[in-house]
Length: 133
Image 1 (cartoon, one colour):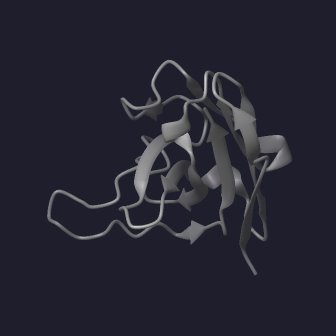
Image 2: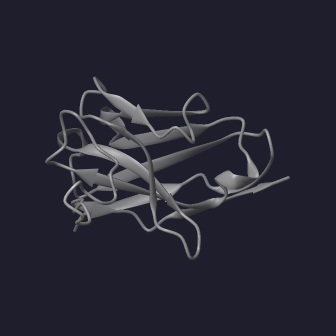
Image 3: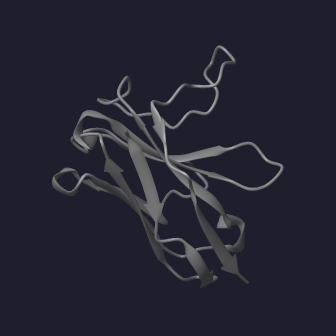
């Protein structure tokens, strides 16, 4: 059974940092691109970053560019999201997702250009991040 488990969330003050981890079991993560998403109640899930299988490609949404850094340790079957200079608007539940189809380039789209939800292979259960002002 494949599982992705996120950890590292919590409560932090504005300007602070957190490091999220996404650990895979039942899956060799180095065959999948991994993406991070976040969601607040009542809003659409937002894709924020992704990393390809060998880390040759990484992408960031404008909302986090320059503050968040994605990395992976394939030997540990883990992907990280280092979040610095956190802002209250970063408060959300953060999810990781693994995707084989986009393994070389990676993607963090929620809805494709054809208007359909992109089907990631595996999702984690999420970890809460709360940033106080």
